[in-house]
Length: 65
Image 1 (cartoon, rainbow, N blue to C red):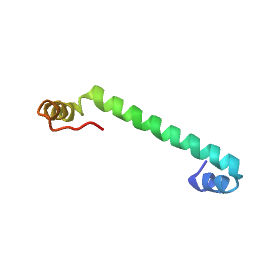
Image 2: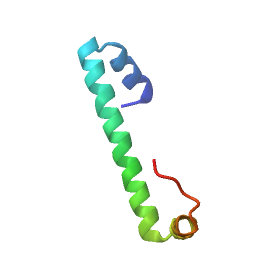
Image 3: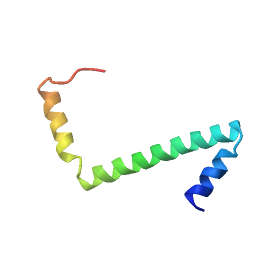
Image 4: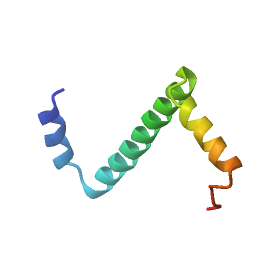
């Protein structure tokens, strides 16, 4: 299926179907983000940021949310 075919199909959805699709797309995008973060943590890509955050926390440079 091409992007053009998908766009055409989406334009033919009723409001309920479109809402369901948008909810699903949001959940799907969030799952991809979670997977990417997990992969980055496991590969060590975030180690320097984690260490910097820990150091700044110990130095009192953080505030509670």
